Amino acid sequence: MLVLDENLPAGQRRLLRSWRIRFRVIGVDVATWGTDDVALLPVLHHLPQPTFFSLDNDFCRPEWAHGRYSLVWLDVRGRQAADFIRRFLRHPAFDSQAKRMGTVVRVHGDGVLFWRLGSRLPSSLLWPRP
Image (cartoon, rainbow, N blue to C red; front, top):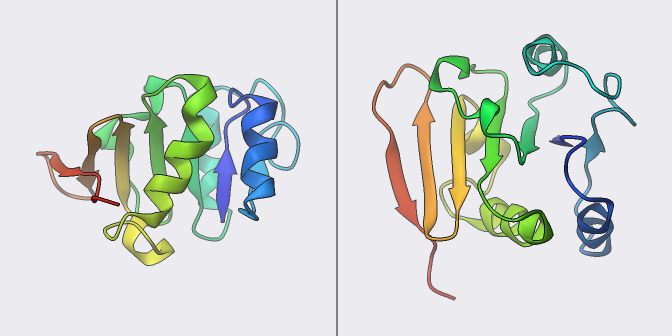
């Protein structure tokens, strides 16, 4: 299950839908609008293996890694969010729910920086060539 933070622009959500990428949105489908970041973690625990995407760097905390969800900070401009969500979901290291679980990820223009549950040091990957 993909869950988008309320801070992702509506136009980016429409673009994801046009690509047939299914998701739920905080404040619309899950939790309430304006829910505090820390209060979202228990909500994620109750969803079936969610991958949570946000433009908020507060979610890039390795200590928040948990085996039941994945946190992805989109360190890109809001108008690029949908493109980078799709790129991330197609990356060979993250192209399934199982591969994403237990990770905290920073997605940026050059690639992906991520921490796996139990790892203190990050790993990084470049975007695959098209």
